[in-house]
Length: 193
Ligand SMILES: CC(C)(COP(=O)(O)OP(=O)(O)OC[C@H]1O[C@@H](n2cnc3c(N)ncnc32)[C@H](O)[C@@H]1OP(=O)(O)O)[C@@H](O)C(=O)NCCC(=O)NCCS
Image: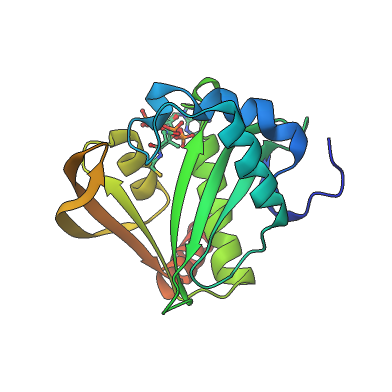
């Protein structure tokens, strides 16, 4: 494992860190699965695509307007890659970012995605001082919708035929959370402890 990989943020059980070359096999294993690809832009993901993707991520920096950065999600105890979170800094409004997320099937249903995305929101609002975080979800992607609502994001729009997924136009929900809503939810949690 590359000990020089930058750690962006940590949660109880996870680190959100830079990808490293030793992640390639784990990344390829989950990304190439049809159930993981179902609501995503790719299909039939190949090993050489995984190698190229991770090499590109190793060179990339966060917070570049117009660019996506993929954050590796790894277990704190073993540094095992279990998924990734993607952040797109909008080109014309870089104070707003779009997020996406994937957790490998064997690590789903355990709360890791909720923990990773909550940690990501903290990083985006408190370290990068973003104004608003948005996410699009296919209206049929139920686990993604449940996750977005669990982390406190609001359904802000229903976008008809907003995305061409594998040749078919699909409807999407737009979810969002403002920095002030994030801070308010933290204050509320402190009050209720
Ligand atoms: C979207 C995705 C990341 C959600 O993963 P997930 O494992 O369902 O989400 P979490 O890790 O937060 O787990 C929550 C589930 O685990 C259950 N759970 C079990 N133990 C838990 C624990 N200790 N803490 C919290 N939740 C726990 C929860 O009840 C919840 O179940 P539910 O969804 O049936 O209500 C995953 O389905 C995925 O990778 N999909 C493919 C990629 C994709 O489509 N991404 C979205 C487009 S970018």
